[in-house]
Length: 300
Image 1 (cartoon, rainbow, N blue to C red):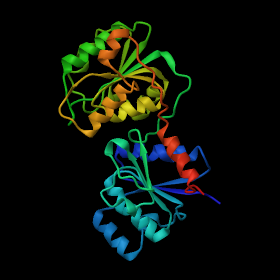
Image 2 (image 1 turned 90 degrees about the horizontal axis):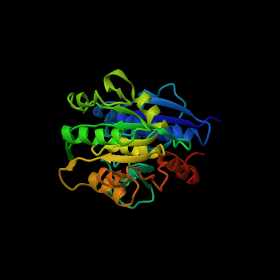
Image 3 (image 1 turned 30 degrees about the horizontal axis):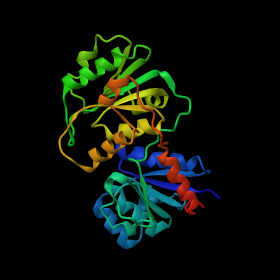
Image 4 (image 1 turned 120 degrees about the vertical axis):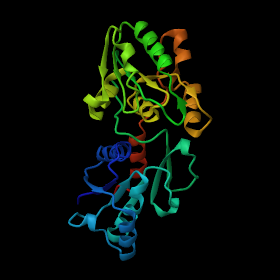
């Protein structure tokens, strides 16, 4: 008998990355079929919850599990369960009570309550697979931009990139920007040797993730939290391009803890050795969560 996953999506890239990551990890453990369903407006969800119906699932086989990331997926998940059954698995700190969901998979930096239905993770789950055969000669530099937690400094970022590329001549570097990256950031690297540029407007997230999977050495600007965890998940040695912190918060605290525990290499640490420290932990969080779900009987 088929094992069916309903993945409720708000179609936001970051949230889809999380839910697809968990679905892929589950699919590596057992045969299943996934159905992607767009989340519905709040008013429609309240109506459907009251009437014990879920029109978006019409014609689909009943779900065994219902997965969602993003606040707008939470009510539709509950509607789906009330109408058609299945276990709900939310991939973030929900705005609704934790007890409303069968499983809550929440990053440690969100400091979730200690509950039987809560699984904590290092960062958000993502679809990056761990690569046992990284290439030491391939390097990747991932650049973010202005954020709530760090001050952006073009001059400092360009200076750090120049030092890294100049002192790692044996590595071929690819530099990828993001939608948040100021247009002026990449103009300063045009003359650097042994460097390719991936402009976000001319590539896809799939291509960037292929580079993350292959690269043995990855640098990420401190503001790009999701990219930091994706890089760690791939098994790469990961360094951080330094930016001035705006204030103490749970995100910066989590990143600083990873530096202090030598899971990440700060730029200042790298300057002493010109080497990135490989993480001692395996950040296979999607696979670990899928294994926990299997052990707890949620996967049949």
